[in-house]
Length: 458
Ligand SMILES: Nc1ncnc2c1ncn2[C@@H]1O[C@H](COP(=O)(O)OP(=O)(O)OP(=O)(O)O)[C@@H](O)[C@H]1O
Ligand SMILES: [Mg+2]
Image 1: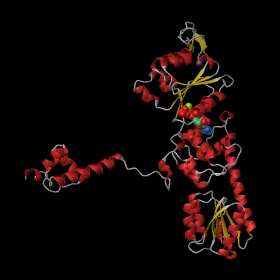
Image 2 (image 1 turned 30 degrees about the vertical axis):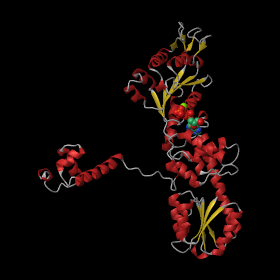
Image 3 (image 1 turned 90 degrees about the horizontal axis):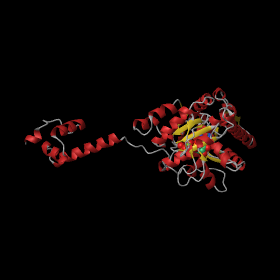
Image 4 (image 1 turned 60 degrees about the vertical axis):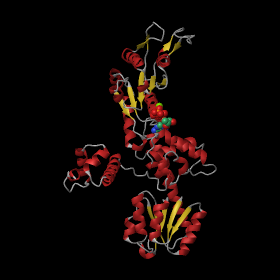
């Protein structure tokens, strides 16, 4: 663990630091409260050991600041006999402990080890909790945030119905995983789950894939083939990127949904299919309807029960659990560590590619960390250059309107200067009417104090 040791008595500081380093910890030392507070901002320790009495405000100020930053970070206060006062007593809670001076360094190392063990158990519990109070169909789908709990609840509610389900969510939010869970939870769980993406397949191919074809239906059709609808018989058909389905195919899909029958391409016979359909999209389908790219009747047919998957940036607290899950999944049995500060950065990053992007990041960091066991922030966050700066906060970007307005004002002032304040000439130069010029000058508070037409009459 990374430990911040704040102690002004140099002999205690040195021997304790050595003992902690011996036990495998990384130790940052500070001799004054000021130094310690500064170190707290830059070092992001996992644990703090501080003397209560120190030059400056003392250890309790450090404790207060640490709890503001992270209430779960353990703080061990070292107190002289005379300073065990009520204040310290009152502050005792799960993460605060105190050790009375003088103490043996071994005792302190043991305390630290206890905190480390507790922290590991908590992390494991958190992961287990995720798995246990959920339906087994959600195994491997991590999510403790209110937003994801809501999704799980909804999936559970609709799983046993036969209704067509629409799953909406940005790329990489886990739409296919949720569709699979829905299937596993449904009465159709024992029958096949068949998935097909409607993206990137031309109309004729997509139809042959979905509906199957008879022998000789087209040049390459040497034998009769069942389509995905038939292959999913008794089970669930997952139609991904439904918004990409060509309009003529949409008509045919609508018919399958309504009548549960179809004909193979090049075939005459009407075939009955028994399937549950789940569709997914990354876009706002209603917009596609408005644009004439998606049939309204099909929209209402699939929109009966929509499930909205939140983007990762809206899943409060899910990133650490997902990272641990992925480290366990891709780590090949090796225990990788991740610094608290790194985890904080991962939580602040907006993850435009959602869970898939996070998954790729963890895999990359594991691959790049070589013999080490600590995953590096640079390997995890390589995507967006804005997130690689010193403080890793995106650069502030001014609203476009403000930038344009400032540029306009500057340009107006420049033009006025060029004409010596002559309004008519200025308007001509700028290619606008005098009325518009006058309004703009007024808006920007430029030279409207005098007679508006003075320049022109001169
Ligand atoms: N909640 C989750 N817990 C664990 N892994 C997840 C979770 N959500 C998604 N994943 C993983 O992230 C990856 C992307 O998930 P999935 O393919 O289901 O997303 P998608 O929304 O269908 O993406 P796309 O829109 O690109 O098709 C998969 O490897 C999946 O296993
Ligand atoms: Mg998908």
